[in-house]
Length: 169
Image 1 (cartoon, rainbow, N blue to C red):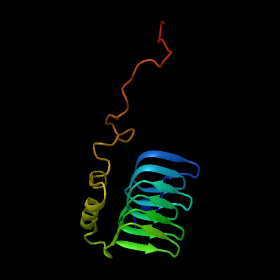
Image 2 (cartoon, helix red, strand yellow):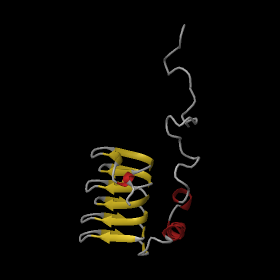
Image 3 (tube, rainbow, N blue to C red):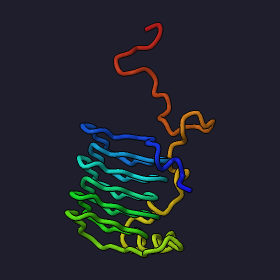
Image 4 (cartoon, rainbow, N blue to C red):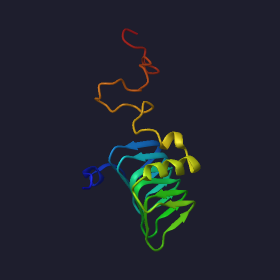
């Protein structure tokens, strides 16, 4: 049975939006804007026809209709729609590409889901940033979700803002 988190959009980067940095999403992420950095998704990522991603991607599955400049690592299924472009290495146990797609890089398609995680690990070690893409999701290096009861990694209070003398000044 399909995981319901794979069909409900948790996060959207809409057309006209731009994100520069690392993105970790628990669930489904849709990108119709511009992203630069790294992207890790526990579920599915959808890059719309107008989406432009300049980042390596790690996800359970992916549908790419726009442009990705970076490696794409999926543990289940990758589908590239007509007009979709991937400039980078690709690992997918199952791979489907419509007519009119472009993939420029090494491609590994195993054809089976069994053992895919081990094969993905070997592929990433040979082609990409294993430190970033093989660590557990939300490891200690990431900020904890708000309301989790654990301290966040926000900057400590730096005092009054510039130009503000504070109370009694």
